[in-house]
Image (tube, rainbow, N blue to C red):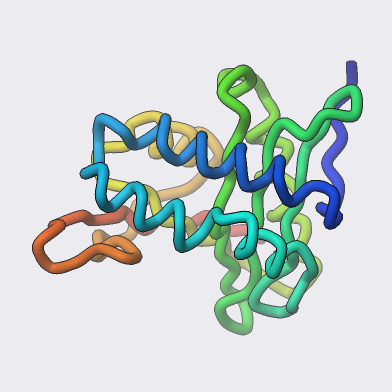
Length: 170
């Protein structure tokens, strides 16, 4: 069983939506308010949204990348450039059955390859404050904390913050 990372295709939409929605709910159910989680899932991981984002739209979006093993999609990630040398890892989610393995690293490596190929020398990611597993994963892969910001889709009354982390790619 060898895992392969490849660009997503239309046939992957339902699986990507299911992995990302389920992964987001599982990862944050004890960390974030349910209303915020559901707003985020609807906004970012509906099948309609995923279908629109399958194809690359460079430089801001390089399209979904998936990792599969034995023909089964087990994870998805995506990112793009936010400036001349700055890239952003927008999302990475894995099927619950494989979260402890190395598939997340394979997806991260693919996004790093894409950012480097586009001339990027740094990669940014946002991680919710309190997400020890996420922060630990990114620290283990060379990311350093830079600043705390209000999380995407957070309302003033939510008080949800993200830690912005950066890794140099030189």
